[in-house]
Image 1 (cartoon, rainbow, N blue to C red):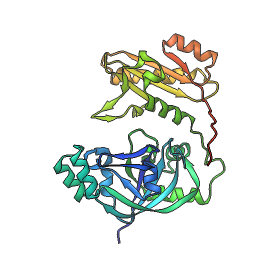
Image 2: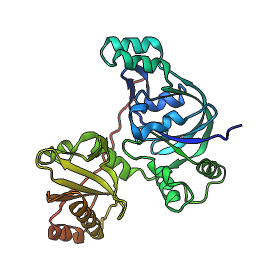
Image 3: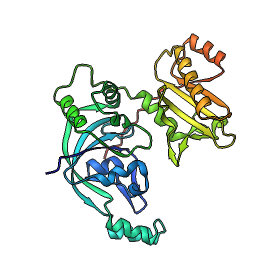
Length: 318
C-alpha cells in the first residue's frame, strides 16, 4: 500500500470563474471546502503547478486561505482527503470550445485528463493556524520550507511533507501558548497594492510600474533574493525599465532602521538585476518616526503612510 502524500493548495475568495464554466454560487475557496472540488484547467501548462498531476486518490490536501476568504482569512483551517480525480464535464468543454475559449484539441485534453480533484473534509481545525505562525515555524525548522509558500502571490499547489501534516495536527490538538497569533495587516496591505495597482494606490506617477515577471511568471510579490531576504514588492517600469522596491511596515511608529533594509534591497536590485537602469525605493507605513523621515530624505526614497478604514453597514432583513 502506497504511503499517503501531502499537498498544499492556496485558495482565494474571488468568484470561481473558469474558461469553461462560471459559478455564481461560489468562490474559489468555496468550490473546495463546500463543493469538494479543486479545479485547475491549466496545471499541465504551468511549470510551478505540475504537482497537480502528482496527486493520487487517498492523498491529503492542506488548504491555505488567502486574505479575501471570509471564513478563515490568512490561515489553514481545513485538511482534505482526495476521493477522486476527474476530467472537466464534456458539456462545459463543448461550450468553452464553441465560445472560442479553447481549441478543439485542448478540449479533448480537458475531457480525458485529470483537471478536477474531488475532496472530502478530512479534518476541520479547532485552532486555525495563521500565516504568521506558519512562517515562524518554517523558519525554526518545525515546518518545511515548502510551507513558506502560504500567501505567496501566484502560488496554487505544491507538495509538502507528512511531517508538516503531523505538526499541524499536533498544533491543533495542543496549541502552544502564544503560538497561534493572528496579525493580518501587513499581508492585507500587500494584497491591496497587488489588487489595485500602483496607479491607484500611489498615484499616476507610478502607473507605468508592473510587478516583476520572470519567464512569464509574476515573481514581484515577496521576491526571494536568495541572499538577503524577501522584498515585499518589486516592480519594473514598462516605459523606461526602471525598478521600484517597496517596503511595507504595519507598525504604529516605524523606526528608521527600515531605511537600511530598503537600501539593502535596492543595492541588491541595482547590482544583480538593473544593468544600469534606475532603482527607486518606497516605504509605506502607518506612522513614520521623526528619525525615519530624516533618513528617507537622506537616502532619497519616497515615504507614504496609510490608514485602515472601518465601514459599518446595516444589513437589510426580510
